Image (cartoon, rainbow, N blue to C red; front, side, top):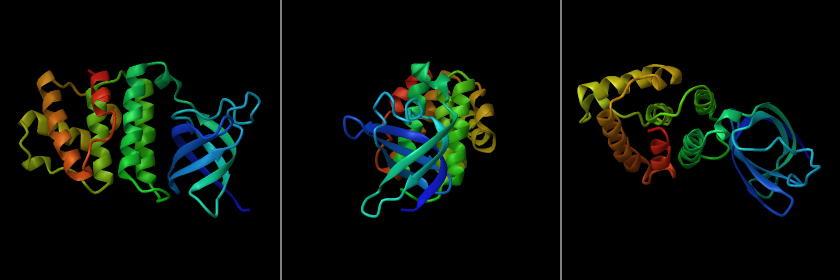
Length: 216
């Protein structure tokens, strides 16, 4: 059976059996895909310490001929983004971003720009304090990559909020995190994007309220 190689981030894991895990990856070339890590829950597994939320690295897998669950063979870690798991607020924001990507994208479709955006978002969370603007900037940039960028120029937003949206779309994640938003502007952007997300995605990605509260 042919072995394929990829680089990726772990978006989600869940038990399959008493000894095995299902690992959901985000990769640039292959998009989202799921692998089975056989024996990963055993103490002496070669996967021990290598499979956790938001870990990043190179991995190899054998593609299944009968399902969309492929057989994970090896993992070489590059980064663990450990600071995220040390802060519940950062973890809630990262989990929301992962949920958004899973809801809004198709499996096994190349997603190089979205992969890069998620990388930048995780790096931001490791380096900066959680804040609502982290979520707003991620949402706006992801919507742009999906071809759903809001037309904020004609939106019912105050001039100050429009400037913030423009800065988030045109600048980097770090710059967005350091923008100063008033409580009124946070509420304004939260509600505006809430309606936009429901209109285009039919339902909010799970965890948005917790992610925004975590950054408040």
